[in-house]
Length: 121
Image (tube, rainbow, N blue to C red; front, side, top):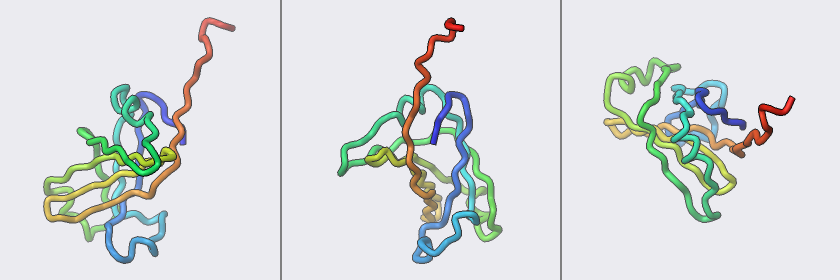
């Protein structure tokens, strides 16, 4: 996946339970969206060692509900973080005040950089 500064990234979130592996990726419980500002891009442009991970707290994000079963999530405290594992692979975890956990599928993430000189034309 390609990331661009000042763009918005939206990922599906699924409740973490015993049926997670059987879920349809096209039918998430929630979507989480956050801006890829300069600071966040710098943090996610890392590739952790094979047996380690990096957690990055998300300060600003928005949630979109897809299942009425989880209406309460929007009305209570929650926090989200990006998890980077070797690859690099990126996923998001959302924890709620009432101890529910939502996860996004891991996605391959290879940052790309445009090193061309804009003055050359």
